[in-house]
Length: 215
Image 1 (tube, rainbow, N blue to C red):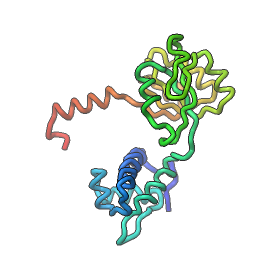
Image 2 (image 1 turned 30 degrees about the vertical axis):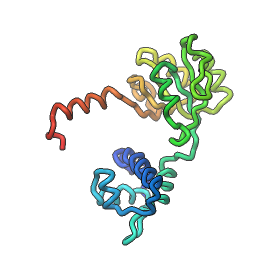
Image 3 (image 1 turned 90 degrees about the horizontal axis):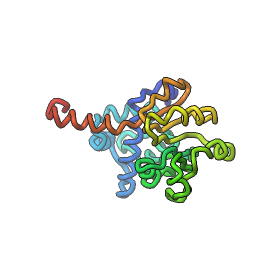
Image 4 (image 1 turned 135 degrees about the horizontal axis):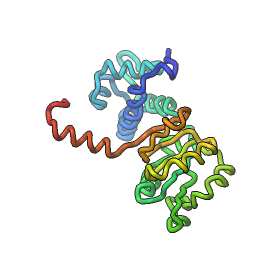
């Protein structure tokens, strides 16, 4: 029996995309089944951890057989909601925002990117993939025409608050946030995934500076 969503720890949830990614690679290699031991080796966790993680959602293996790679990949995709195609807009079409829009396969990751916005007139009218960048002044008009489920924030921290206020008033309460602005402090009913690339790089720096101590 699967646990209720509010009983599942974030550490388990954050491992699910890794399961999905590795299972996708195995599926691409035409591997039909995998044991918890082998999957654990790929994931760099214990076999017990694999079984505990998957049992949170009901368990999908068969004793003596292991897991069907394709079925487990499909089940995890359903758990993650990758077939929902949530509609998203991207705010900030600078170098970083452009890279996010161009190189991430939003459709494969549960989202459909349908709008890109920037306050710089020089960027407005340019193309990101098949999307024309619009001026941020058009946000309200655009959102009135489309149901927007989430916003991707690729703007500097100092520029976020005004834009965030507008997005929140438009009913957008889910954010993929690259800005370093603490959205949850201002709006506690939002769902936010903060991405701090600098934190990740500093963690690498620490591990290089303390070789052997983090094994």
